[in-house]
Amino acid sequence: MTDKGETGRHLLETLQRLRADYTATLGSKIDEVEAAAAQLSGAPCLGKVGKALTDIRSHAHKLAGSGATFGYAAMGETARNLEHAADRVLEEGEGLSERSRDELLGLMSALRAAAERGSDGALELPFPATDDEVASHSILGVDEGRSVLLVEDDVELSAQLGLELENFGFSVTTLGNPTDLQAALEKTDCAAVVMDVVFEGDDKIGTETIRQLKHDGALPQPVIFLSGITDAETRIAAVRAGCDAFLTKPVSVTELVDTLDRLTGPDDTEPFRVLIIDDDLNMARYSEAVLKGAGMITMAVTEPLEALEAIESFSPELILLDLYMQTCSGTEIALMIRQNRALAGLPIVFLSSESETTSQLDAMRRGGDDFLLKSMKPDHLATAVVLRATRFRALRALMVRDSLTGLLDHSTTKQALETEIARSQRNDEPLTFALIDIDHFKSVNDRYGHQVGDWVIKSLARLLKQRLRGVDIIGRMGGEEFAAVLAGADSAAAHEIFDRIRIVFSEIVHRSEDKMFQVTFSCGIAGYPCFGDASSLTEAADKALYQAKRAGRDQVVVAVPLEKEPSVRKAC
Image (cartoon, rainbow, N blue to C red; front, side):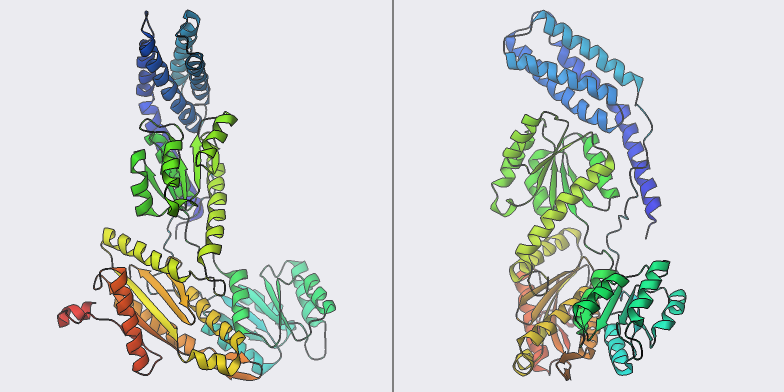
């Protein structure tokens, strides 16, 4: 992975190149404004005056925004004054007075002079950007291998918890006494400490040890306390010691893994996808560079009429839209997008040099959700976009995710499959669709109760999220059935992945009161392009799953088109 500082320097170099490109074309941009102003000379007709003023306003508006962005603050301010002067004459609608002409021509001269003086200062390192390499896991998946120190004097419980945590990808070091913890911390680069509260012979040694280590700065890692004593006094002692979570015995490994994931898991959330629509190529490239430098995936469109096509192919989570464009306005594009019911909730943020509050509010009334100024600093722009995209993703998750597991629901998974197939077709890449079903799940519910059944479902959901990549799509299709879409993976690679997950899941020990049991699953896999659309992929994976069930369960079966030649079937 690229060093963050190196990525930040790379972004700075990109912005410097964009500024150089902007400087190189600035003279021609000023020429365009002067060409429009030349139409005001003499005694032109009212129609020519109106067109000239409209052109002056349009060009000046873009220079006002881009000037502030690329370090030409004085020129940008002059362009803003020119824009407002042209606006005033247009609003009056009484033709061009000699006084107004002189004002406009004077501002034109000032604009040229400000541009020729150059930029106002050197660019600074925008922010400590994140890495822009979004695919952090290999196609075969990665065991996270996070190290956990488990401090527990119950030897049997310690061994069992250690085994189960290892099944979920953790590396576990067990200690029998809190007095050994400091030495272990010095030797082990652990991600978290899991510790009993009460130890034989001393009811307070657990909390006191953690409190002292936290006080000395020797334990920055999160701490999870385990306890069979759940009264308020014990919990308060744990809080005062500096623990991050408190779990009651008997310990559910699924709940423990959930907590460890929350406290120690890497932020492998898929980067935000932002579509930039701006007919000013310099500004589009600038916004794209800033957002990419902040770890987002971007697509820039400089022809506004291509907006719907870009939305369909790119699937953005936020649109950054210029307000004033030549072909059509940003508000017209926003209204066009809002007419599509499927896009009604997609955030549209206007990015413009328009500083008038009334105009900003009017734009938002016509389809926008927010308004940002082009003069914003790069880190402010990136932060503003992240905050708005985060809210969209959180709200969308409430609507499209299964409440028990946090995975995508049935309909959203199907839609995502169709989207990924279209993307695989464009990129000429393989794709695999898998259906997973927990074996004999009805007997689990009948024997241990639905609450325990829910924990089994959650444990498989958690395992799938851990063992698959952050970019893979995982959904709960209903009941005990799950689905996964692996872009870029052929059937052979997917078979290896899911067979490893199958083995690990079969080794997880589930608890119901004093009873322990294990569960298996069966899996059917179908690959694109052997099966060319969502319907045939789903049907083929379902038949492969049924075949796995008939063959004895606890296995992974890959679907093969019957009409294919043997050599082709092997490739599928």
